[in-house]
Image 1 (tube, rainbow, N blue to C red):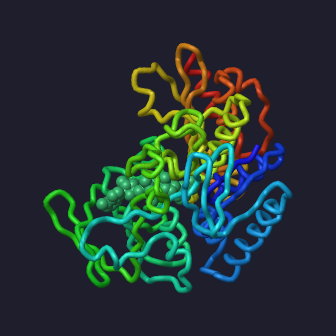
Image 2 (image 1 turned 90 degrees about the horizontal axis):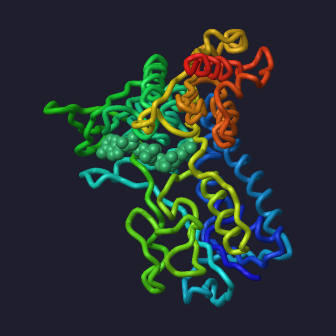
Image 3 (image 1 turned 135 degrees about the horizontal axis):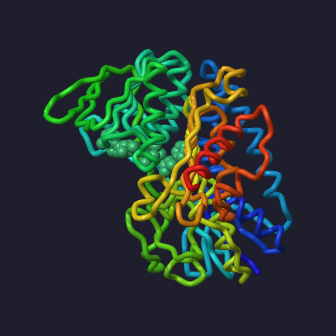
Length: 421
Ligand code: NAD
């Protein structure tokens, strides 16, 4: 069997490596660098900056190069052919790139997304997250448009670097898709660290060094040396002529079924190009699902329990349902604070909180929300419990080591079990 994968981000290169390990001949076509947005201008460089006290481009580039070399090594598999160039869909079984037509039994499109902007006067005076990663100096005043994941991560990073930071968010709260309880607490923590956050703020225009916005019927200006536009990302649809093959899509992404197959049999799409949860780990899981369908091997990947993390200071993470998504379900919650945890206090990381949501009737854990140090790692215990259908009481029968931050989760689970009675 032979497959063609278009795009070398996590959805593309991880699927290529997996396919080759299963003995499938794989042609990986990409016009961008190996690792895609995640490695080159997303997750990884951002995390490199998170670990610095001042922007250090040399260190950031070294991290990217090291990881890129690792992927290049993986792609040297004898069953993988790497093609550098823009792919053109010829038929549901063939793609042209770099002057050659490649034939395959199936095609997986994994061409990712790009930063979105606002259709407002002066939008070109703002920079996007990719440009933000390349700054060599720290702006005195940073204005971030959008209080979503990208906006808040850069707000945290540059606040730590010493910038005076203002975040302008259109919705009534930051992180609109997250649990409201978690988002409110994160906002309070960020404000305590000196970040100004304006919600229900409608940005109307940008002029040299100034962002103009309204709240209700009042008008405001925020002066800034650097303006970051972080109002979402949109799928990279323009680089492919999807209409030539009749592949169904909307501006929000390529339409796919549960197996990641498009309306054209044999053509699949995974990752940001499908417009769902724009997360690297979702893209690679979707790639595995597509590959499993191509191979006829069903899997049990649970796309309803996707852990997500925001690398602010403090970190925020969640898995399963938010309290708002539980409307119509009778639930109980268990909450615990980091300040009651020995390890958190001892290590000076006592600003944090955890909430577990369980279904009252069954006792099963259905949601977890953590704010605080190492939330991005701690969330996986909750994800496992949710995915395996554990009850809060069963989870409390699992011994948690002392002194660890995992005991915060344990305390919230215990609160939940008690509330169930
Ligand atoms: P986002 O959708 O998370 O946030 C965009 C924010 O901008 C929203 O809060 C939205 O209400 C706000 N907004 C929209 N229009 C606005 C306006 N006119 N004025 C002010 N605010 C406005 O998008 P993002 O932060 O750009 O991130 C893009 C994607 O990348 C997301 O899907 C995100 O999950 C993903 N991402 C994930 C991580 C991570 O998992 N750690 C990190 C970075 C990006």
